[in-house]
Image 1 (tube, rainbow, N blue to C red):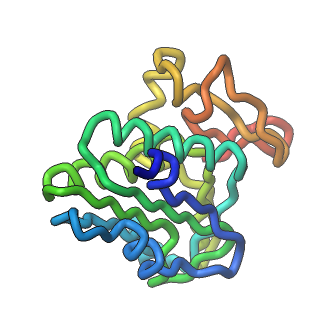
Image 2 (spheres, rainbow, N blue to C red):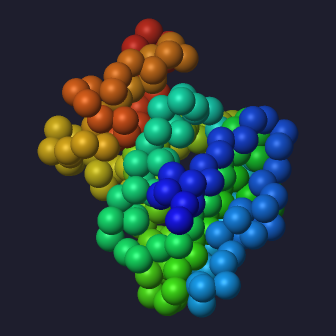
Length: 194
C-alpha cells in the first residue's frame, strides 16, 4: 500500500506553466473511489467594479510546499481520503486562466467535497503565496478573506499555521515551529502591503 505522502501530488508551477487539470484529476482517480471533488481558482475579469487584467503570484516555494503537504496531512486526519492533488501557479495569470487547482478522491462524496473545501480554504488562509491584482488603472497586493479571518488567531495556532512575514523579498520566519500562517508581504521601508 502506498504511503500517505505517495498519495499526495503537490506542485508549485513556475511562471508561464499553465495547470494541466487532467494530470491532477488522473492522479487522484482510482477504481475504488466513487468521488472526485475539484476546485478551480480562476482569474475573473472584475473586482469591486475595477477591470482586472491579470493576477500575479509570488511564493516562498520551499515553505509553501511544506505547508501544502501539512494541509494534505490534516485533511487526511479529518476525512477518509484516497489521494489529493494540489497545483498553484506563480507569475502572471490572465483572466480566465486557472491559478490554483485542488482534486481530492474518496470512496464517498461527502469526504471528497468537505476535504476539497478545507484544502482550498487552508491554502488561502495560510500558505506563503502572495497575490497582486493588476487592474486597467493600477495594482494592489491582496489579502484573502480567509487570511483576514484568521488574523485574529495569530499566536493561537499550533503546529502548522504560525505567523510569518515576507520582508524585502525574503521570508522571515516561520515564527516558533510552524510552516504556515498569516501572510504579510512587507516592502518599501517596512510598510505592509495588503
